[in-house]
Image 1 (tube, rainbow, N blue to C red):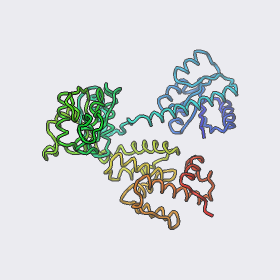
Image 2: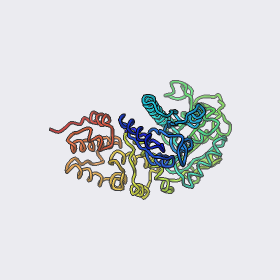
Image 3: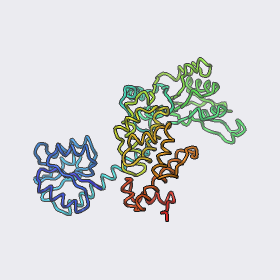
Image 4: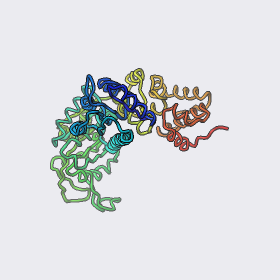
Length: 462
């Protein structure tokens, strides 16, 4: 339900506005001063604020200015002493509109509806921009993360080559993206190559391209990643897995800023900034003869080490909350709260898969938990070593039968769909297939629940 906050030091005005807005099916909160109003904005999800300008303790303009720093909730300013100058000042400070007392009922309701529509559009735009952008924020306030952010700010505007190290799933790719995003090359392409995913016999063709007929399957000319990244950034992920022959050619490209396609003779000038990443200890690889020392020194002008999640467990609450908000938004369900005990349980887990593993676990918890994610949910669903406890719990909840073994699922998506289907079917049976009651109980919209019923082919038992 849409929630509107009224901030006005005149009780009759607050009462009148409350009666009007509640009649229109809005949820209404009201306070008699600006300080309390700001406190409500910090604690509650408010969709719109109606704020008087002339008040004791803190006037409306001061409330509006302070609110801009904590929320993007639209404000409608109200005054019994309205002037053009006051209206202009309110708009300049970010107010959606300005209304004069005594309030005209029709004007008030139209303005409220328009302001709410604008607020919805602003939120949808932010969500869409977040989905379109691949460069997510680097979350965390630990010393290691602060150092990474400071290094990015200093290094990104230069063309210095960067070597990013860290465990799998720790966020090396995100660091590379921010280095490109904050560089002078940000308007040019960022081309990514996973060196571990390309067979050694094809890596040179992938990086430098090839001419038609240069080998059996070369039926046409192909442009390589170096050329695709010209004037931009080339991100060589898992460079520790690159073959020695390809390393030699990459070294030459870095030294001379020239490449030659496989099967070609012409040298092609390239202007590329190279960022490399690896989860291996390249110095040990050099000792073992698997990596060239001269290439290592070419790549490691700047070294950035991304700490593992176990090394920065204090960042887990911030990251987990962000993932929970994002995932609930993707599934179009109310945001679930992670309890303090659940957060402590997450911090105590061994994170071998780092950020990637944490996100998968939060998604699992969002799907399988009720309205809050508790430490019991973490114990049942998040810890891989206790997966069979989760199976037992599902069987127990369904009063025998219906249990399942994890080996029967080929992917997490398949398991997730099955668990979601079982959960929804159980809740519908429990509520005698009252869809409205079930939707309220599990915290999703009724239309969304109907979609799930259709998706999983659920039917009421006779």
